[in-house]
Image (cartoon, rainbow, N blue to C red; front, top):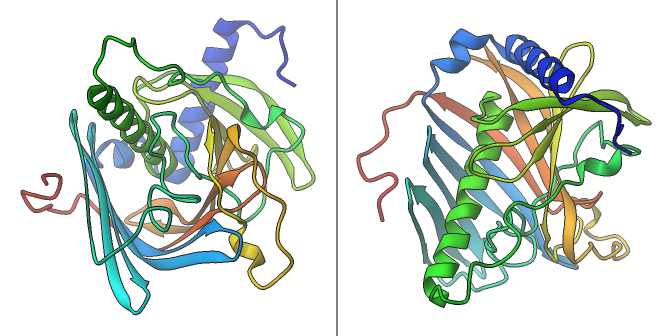
Length: 303
């Protein structure tokens, strides 16, 4: 459980020092601060339910501080299906083609968060530390609670979607670049069979409180956790085996694990990302390439 006696000033100072050590470990402040755009490409494997798995290729485009796009191409029923979700400042949009049906792609079971609560089938697993025995990173959910009934339903839905995308951008900036616009406070040490980790709580301006787990010797990031809506996907690691235990429904601790670090342009970047709620892997990303500060097309974030 969280140590309740920690003083906030001391926590903030230690958190800032550990975050600085982590940034140094992955490449240093100067190199990380110089990154304004990032393109990440690879393959994904996602569970959308018991014995239902889809795979394909993905590209993620980030332009700090407020632009994000994820595009996927999936072979589905003998034909390619394409799906894109994007955040362009305060605007959000989606696009799809090729007959991808609801529940098989971004918004279903193990898909991307679509409910404005920073969740929706996200998960991290796949290698090493799982943070057991330390409250699993459970946090208050900043995005919980709908806006007042006076707000039209379509505007309310758009606002929830905007906050979801902003939270996803904040997470990815933290995972890949250790960049955040919020403070990081040290909240304790996590114990697990794999070892220990220093745990920081990060509170970004756009997003939910997120816990960052650092390896205590190298200071490399191992995992992040946050509170959000669990999806319905199964475990992508158990295909062909007995049906896995059902993932938790409703609010859950969502995990994203980072592994397979490789150096790109002098920066250590995780090439394996896995996600899901509380010990269940619902999505696995294998990253083939990182492009640092590429020149994006003018319409990259425009529908």
